[in-house]
Structures are given as C-alpha cells and as structure tokens.
Length: 147
Length: 82
Image 1 (cartoon, each protein chain N blue to C red):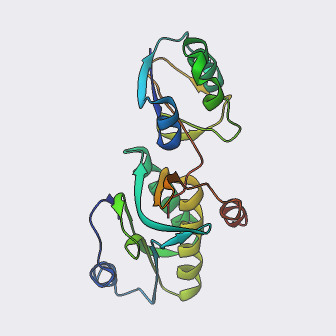
Image 2: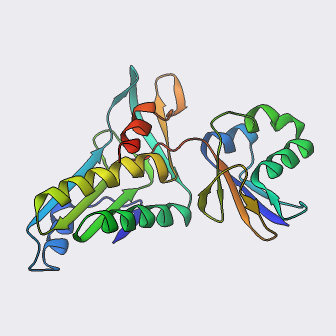
C-alpha cells in the first residue's frame, strides 16, 4: 500500500493493519522520518513539501516493486506526507513485513534510500532568512548507489 | 504538441508551472529544453543547470530519451523527500 497525503499517520494503526494481513509474518521493520528544527546551521520554523501528483505515486510503486523482487517480502506500507509541516511532524513511514528479519531490515533501508533519490518530492524550508529550497545531498546518492 | 511541466525551485525561477509546447516530434528531451530556451531566452540560465532532471510521461528519463507527440515532459531539480 502506498499513500501520498497531507494528513498525519499513526504508526500503531498502520502496523496493526500490516501485521494482521498474514500469519506468515515473522518480522516487521518500520522507519519513520521526522521534520527537524535545524538544517545546515539554520533554524527551521516550518516546511512545505511539494510533489508531482501521479509520478510520485508511480515512482514509489516502482521502488516497492523492486524491493519485492529483491527480497522475500510479504507486504509493505509506504506513507509520505506533502504540504505544510512543522518541526517534529512525521514526514514518511515505511513498514516492511517478511518471514525473517534480514529481509525486512534490508528492504526498509533500500526503500528509504531509493525514495530519497528517485521519488519526486521537494522540501522548501522556512528559516529566519526566509524561504529556502533544500539542496539534494551527495550522501543520499551514495546511499542509493550501494544497492 | 506536448505538455511541459516545471517543479519546485525551477518553477519559481521561471515563474511558470507548465505550458503546452509545439515541437517537431519525435525528438529528444534535450531538444525540448532548447526549444524552450529559444522561446524564452530569459530562462536559459535556469534551464541549463547541470543538475536538472527530466521525466517523460512520469518516468525518470535521460536527456537523449525520445519524446513523442502528446507526451508529458517534466523538468525539475534533484529530489529531496523522505
């Protein structure tokens, strides 16, 4: 399941929905990305997350499909928020279920590394100096390259 | 006729979210950029950036990939989600 939405999400609710899908699940790995109140030395008061409606969902689906091919996964849930966000808000949720933990750990990290470099989302931060588009990080490219 | 879209900082630099574009097709994504610069010389700096990415019909693409009549061609800066 993939959702791109303005609304917040509840980790426990999503986890229970995934857990109850199959008795064969032996491991669920979860990742939640949050909004920080600092970035590159600036205090960040808020953020706006832009996306490319249609393509963003397709890009996430492609990443999830590839994870399903690479590891013996049972299912997954990916939720990414868009629109206005405040410090400490939840931004992204990735849940991966498999029979054993190794696949769940690896696939969860793979999905996040690819989401960071392939899925069309853009962050604009509100700092004391005004609005500022976040620059892409070379370290994110490096993280995706290792897969 | 194709549909061109711009996102994020690029959209703000151009002050344009997108436009229909008449272009002889098939062509390459890089030809779309050149045509845009011919029509809007003031966009040259923003559109010639080294890290501009392109998607054709909502699939990540390369500058030499083919563009057909009716395609949706999006240009955008490197992504920063997650």
